[in-house]
Amino acid sequence: MFPKPITDLFGIQIPIIQAGMVWCSGWKLASAVSNSGALGLIGAGSMSPEILREHIKKCKEATEAPFGVNLPLIYPRVEEQIGVIIEEKVKIVFTSAGNPALWTNYLKSHGVKVTHVVSSSKFALKAQEAGCDAIVAEGFEAGGHNGKEETTTFCLIPMVAEKVKIPIIAAGGIGSGKSILAAMVLGASAVQIGSLFATAEESSAHLNFKQKVIASQEGDTMLTLKSIQAVRLLKNEFYQKVNEQESKGIDNTELKILLGKGRSRIGIFEGNLQEGELEIGQIAASIKKIKPAKEIIENLWAEFEHTKAIWRV
Amino acid sequence: MFPKPITDLFGIQIPIIQAGMVWCSGWKLASAVSNSGALGLIGAGSMSPEILREHIKKCKEATEAPFGVNLPLIYPRVEEQIGVIIEEKVKIVFTSAGNPALWTNYLKSHGVKVTHVVSSSKFALKAQEAGCDAIVAEGFEAGGHNGKEETTTFCLIPMVAEKVKIPIIAAGGIGSGKSILAAMVLGASAVQIGSLFATAEESSAHLNFKQKVIASQEGDTMLTLKSIQAVRLLKNEFYQKVNEQESKGIDNTELKILLGKGRSRIGIFEGNLQEGELEIGQIAASIKKIKPAKEIIENLWAEFEHTKAIWRV
Image (cartoon, rainbow over all chains, first blue to last red; front, side, top):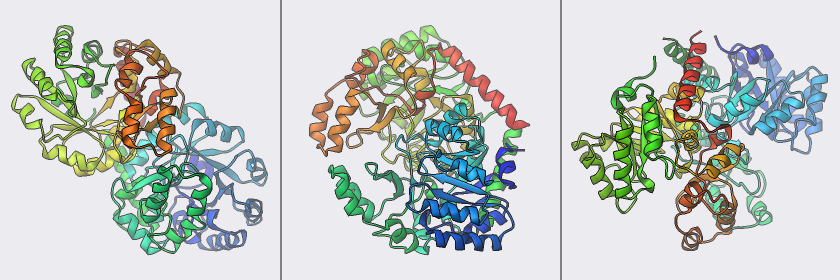
């Protein structure tokens, strides 16, 4: 029916991964996704080790299906977060934003399946060498933090597929059953979806943010802040201010001062649409409605099956 | 077998269009492509009306199959070029870089099928309203001139497909049979391929340029010159110079002086890899060899059929 490596690897029914996203994906979203047959991820990027433990515990109570944790490797308390993951016996970890060689062996020695997020073949190979079980290959169109090379999903997936032997999960621009099939045709075994789940009912994002995403049109997101750490976001007042300074050639220190702290929390969690950093992918323009995670997954999968049937004719 | 609107529209066998490209696609390339069952386009962007007439005449001698002309609508002698097209009885025109409302009716009244190149749904709708027979929807990953909104092929094709009724030709990132099928799954009826044909034996690009494209790696192209007219090119000395000035906040007048004239001719046609503008798409990194157009098309189509067969299982 469809490539099996990822569903077998994680013990799930549907080869859809809900991306771990700051301020969106706590236990409510992750458990709702996992209860629907896909794989839910708790996004540890916006959580202290204590908060992460709480979310893992609640997720275990809310689902008996497999779920995982997405862990950016650049935060100062990553060692403590990994301690929590091991103690709480989480068996699936997606690492991102850092070197996969650092923690993969340690996690695997505790029976954890490790997937690393990359934006190029070069880092896909590094993840494979580090012993990762799978990789997420994320294109330029994806929301949030992104690679410098700007390689799009359409170009990235085949290039990565040519280089690595471990299964590939495509990310960036996936928002329909058709795009799931297209990603698989290009060489992916599964997909990771962010934007659509950021607007799910169970997402912990502020309603203001969800409504802003739904109202957004084609061309409303932009990859920006490239001189510090490229991030795709909705173009709001905050973006305009930062972009203006960046295009005037402001240096990185001044830019960091202008940025300040906690911009994604202010925007996504607190719903301040003017001053916050509204991280979302290009596919946002095609999202029409806030829906429960279960309905999102059912719709995606029905469209995938329907599209596949057409191409079978 | 595959969506028919485009093959029927142009009277071709294989739903692949060779993009009209400055300094690459003269009569030799266009006729070789058309003789192989796909659609060849003469790129009028780098041709005076006199030179264009010569290429059309030679193309008619070299093939009995349908071929067309790609015509950027922004050049000063466009009216004369259109005169030549009508006089020489070319029946297929792809217009780009301009307003489709200007010439579509006139061309159609002379029995010409008109396709317009767009980078957003908004302009796709405008092309449909202007009476175009089809559109090329070109993603961010494409080489050469490109849109401001940076929407990728993966996001653009489904969004355009939702809005317009005329057939869609996907462009940007297409370099394999798999990607042809993926584009069709996303909603396209055909594909337009540039980079691969820029390196074809029959392309009039300089051997230096073709070899540079073949040697290029993932991440070696960049969309640049956004403040004047966004263009994707290989990162060479010329790019570094322009990019440095742009990121320092140089104004448009100064930037235009720095650019000078004829950069694409210098780079692509004369083979000056340091000082020229080397326009090519992201998919360049996956091109391994200079091949005749016929072989390129046969390989693409065989892989398309093979991939489709897999998904039929």
